Each structure stands twice: as C-alpha cells, then as structure tokens.
Image (cartoon, rainbow, N blue to C red; front, side, top):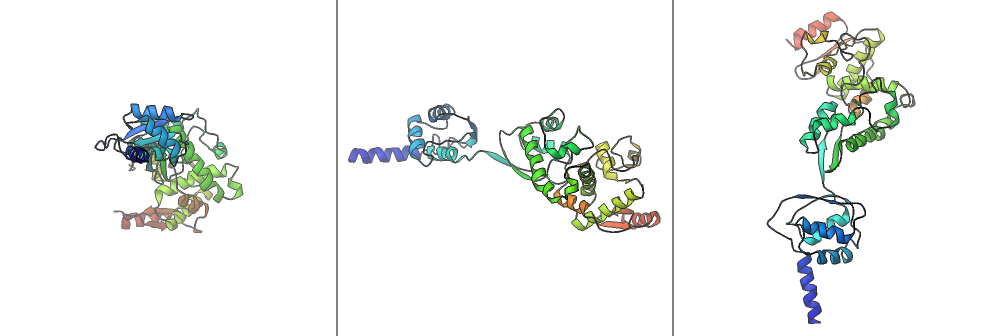
Amino acid sequence: MLLATCLTAWFLVAVNSAKNPNDKTELVFTVQEGSSIDKIALELQAKGLIANTAIFNLYARLGPSRGHLLPGVYSLSPSMSLSKITDMIGRGEVANKKVVFQEGLTIDEMGKKWARAGFGTAQDFIGATAPPNRFSQAFLSYRSNPNSLEGYLYPATYNIAVNTSATDQISAMLDSFGSVVMPKLPPEYQHSSKLNDLITLASIVEKEANTTEDRKLVASVFYNRLKLGMKLESDVTVNYATGKSETSASDIAVDSPYNTYKVAGLPLGPICNPGLDAILATLNPAQTAYLFFIADNNGTIRLAMTLEEHQANIKKYLE
C-alpha cells in the first residue's frame, strides 16, 4: 500500500512538472496526422518540451485524452507541465493568431498584413491570388477581371493557425464571402454578371464613404451618373490605378481600365475588398437625383445636383 501511494505521488508530481519552469520560450510543435503516442512523445522529448516519454505515454492514455491526440500545430513551452502539454494536444488547442483584415483593404494591403502577422511574405499572399490557382467558388465565374480576386476576399477578423498557407487563408476568405455575402443577395445576383457589377461599385462606395447612410447616398450618385451615361469620375479608382493615397491633377489622365475619369461605366473590376455594409448599401441605395458629391474634411458627404453647386461645395468645405 505504501509503495502504491508513493508511486502515485511520484507520478502526479512528474505529470504536473515542467521540463524547465524558467524557460518561457514558445516552440512550434507539429503533430502529424496518424502519429502514434510513442512518436509524439519522442518528438516532444527531442524538442526539449518533456523530460520523460514513459510518463507522457502513460498520462496520454490514462488522462483526459484517453489516448486520442489530435494533429495540428501547437505553441508549446518547456515551462509548461507535461499534463498541460498533453491536454492541449488532446483538446486540439492548435496555435493561432488573430488577424484583422479591415473593410476596404486591397489584396496588396492584405498581403502586407499577412506578412506583419508572421505567416510569410506579402508576395506569398498576393501571388497565391493570381492565376493559375485552385479556387473554384461558383461566384468567381462572373468576374469581369478573371485575373484578380480583388473584391471577393471577405474582410473580417480571422483566427489563423500558425502553419496556414496563403492559399488556404485565401480559400477561407472566399468561403466567407460565399457564406456571409451571397445569401443576402437577391436571386438575380447569384448567377450573373450583376454580382460583379455590384461588388465593383460597392468597392468604390467602401472607399468613398464611412457610414451606412453616406454609402447609400454615394451609391445613389453613382447609379444616377451611370443612367445618364456620365463617367463616375471617382478619385479612389484613380488611386487604385496609381497606387497612391491622394489624387493629383495629372493622375486623372493616367491610362488605366480602373481610371473612371477616362473609362465609361464601371472600372475593370473591384478596387478593394468591401465589407457587407458597403455591399448592402450599394444594393439598396438612397433614392435621389444628385449627380455630384464630395467628402468634407470630417468625412461627411456633401451632395449637389449641378456642377455649379458641386464647385460651391468644394469651395465651402474643402478650400
């Protein structure tokens, strides 16, 4: 009885002890699909994460995991107890990072976020969006620019496993577009070029206005101009073409299918990845007769019916 008690006490101490309590270094540890407990134990020991493979084997089989350790990438430390490491793998608590892709980011800007989060280079992300690629979501069939996924990478906060590839993340963002945006669109937008037109205009609206009501007003102006055959003349489309954040007088003459000072109708495709609010505001615009707008220094939209009123707004609110 005394021996059994001593062995139990020793086992509990060993299970709840860390290899090195003072070493807080976080190490990436991968459990491959189909790995045995023995193999995982040896690899943990080789990485300096556990001291005793026999204790690990026993606890993995008799503890909460009951012998079921889940594949994935984990962030572990020598300062963690053997039981904590085993339980994390048993629960599948894979390592991930929270990355916020805000509404209105371009693919290039998303790539920079991807790089800053430590998943790879910006070019890894950008390159994975370019053809040829394996993305086959049905809504992609209606793009006017088949060489770009701009507009369809749904902006949101994503918890991303540390070993996620750029291709897998892009696929997840496309899937989010399919699950979040598509169900909210009328049937006629599901299987036609109307989807491309909506997302393209919504991407411009996203960049031009900050609130739901202002977005509806801006969308109204653009629809009114399109109906009359007027060019959209949107600075944000020029900025997309030039890669700048401000528009100069010379920029509006740039030769680009995205420059709406030169091309009639919509640009070649979306100029950013709009959020749901901008998409729904563009789908349900305000009913107005306005043909001009500016955003004042506070971001408030100022509308005008005529060019003279528009110029007066510029003088009043921007000069």
